[in-house]
Amino acid sequence: MNYLADTHAFLWFCQDDPQLGAVAKLIFEDPANRIFLSIASCWEISIKTGIGKLHLGEPSAVYIPSALARVRFNLLPISLEHATFVETLPHHHRDPFDRMIVAQSLLELIPVISIDTQLDPYGIQRIW
Image 1 (cartoon, helix red, strand yellow):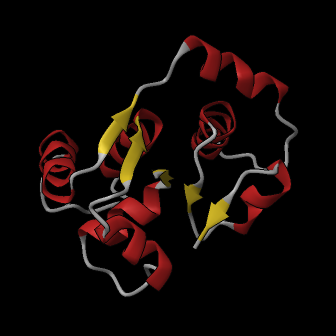
Image 2: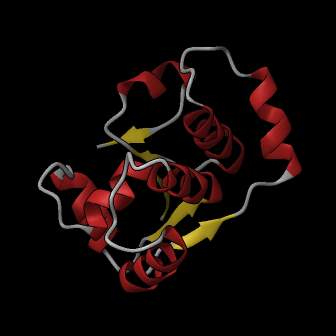
C-alpha cells in the first residue's frame, strides 16, 4: 500500500526517535508498503535547518538524500494540480507545508502518517 509520511514522521523514523508511533513504525518497516515523502517536507526541513530550528548534524542537501536511500522512501513531487488545489482547502491548518501534504493526500488518495490531529478536519485518512 502507498503512504505519505508527514515531515516529523520521516525525521523520527530516520532518527529512531521514540516519539514515532508504533503503528507508523510498523508501516514504515514493512517492505510491502511504498512510502512517499513530499517535496514540501524536503523544503520544510531545509528551511528549518537553515534558520537553526532543526539540527541534522549535516546540511539538508546531504541528509535528505542519504536518509531517503537508507529508509527506502520515495519522493512525491509537487504538481501544478497539487499546488493549485491548496487554494480550495479550508483553513483548518495554517502551515503551508501541511496544507500541501493534505492536498497531495486528497488528490493522490494516499493516507498520511502523522501525529498531527489538525489534519483530520480535511477528511484525509491519517494514521498514527
